[in-house]
Image (tube, rainbow, N blue to C red):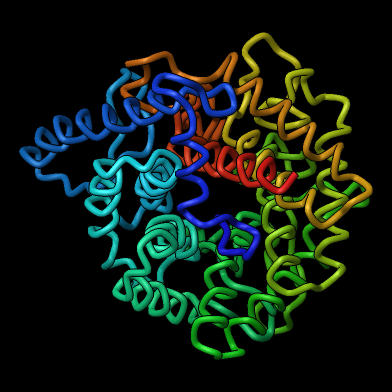
Length: 403
């Protein structure tokens, strides 16, 4: 998600969309299908939630599909709770559909309580993708206040000795102070809060976390470890391993995408050249990897054994495409290569991974992999794949308007 100046205002995007005739396609993706799928997802959510309420389960949004094909619903504390609201905001901006904006508000409001949840590093995922996208479209000052409080809460997880934010509180018998590559994505909330409030603390600790991750998370080939564990007394690295990848030394596909997106965003917000260099290195690792399929939709781990049952991870592809559109703006010599790669990914997603009308309960994309080692969410739709796909489409539109 981006608040950068290069993003075109809402009116320009709407002009582009509405200049097409009814039933026409936006970059070969049917706008009406996107709208209809997301609305179908909301209807299916209401039906499923009613049943879960009877069972005494508190849920506020949609995450994925269960193994039996039913909707997987989640509470606000889940790290994925902001993505469906964010998809609605993005789709509302792309289409100008007031009904989607109304749904976006309805799915954003229940997340407000998370602004005080200091038990998680996922504040950026939850709040920037929901309230952040909402604020970008509406300028609602209530959303701004919620985001600032969310940033304040996130700062409580920063450890000065380590120079990073603690990612997880679970598995304390396994890790002392775990930091995961995913955490790079939550720094945008802090950069945003610094600009909004003028408080340099947010900026400083975001930069420090990115620098610590840069120093310790990457291998010689510029692939990333998933988890780095630190000693809180000395700040020294204790161990480097994985939780969701094939092995401690493998390149978990979504982790590489988080790193690419995160360092591109950090360069945009800070101008620190080492962040841009790292983003470039990660992009080259992904795009030139010998195990990347010809359609550029990666397997769940670049080093996973080549078996007939090896699943793809569409979410990693969508995140990568979105990041490449932004990275292309900062590296002129590779601009064409990055744009062509992003276009290739989006073309593949549309032709082979986009849900048919009415399919997948309303999710836009199928065939993502959540956590293969835990046998969780394998080869299913996942809300963050839809979110970054829509963001990539928006960035595609903005790029073409700049040409």
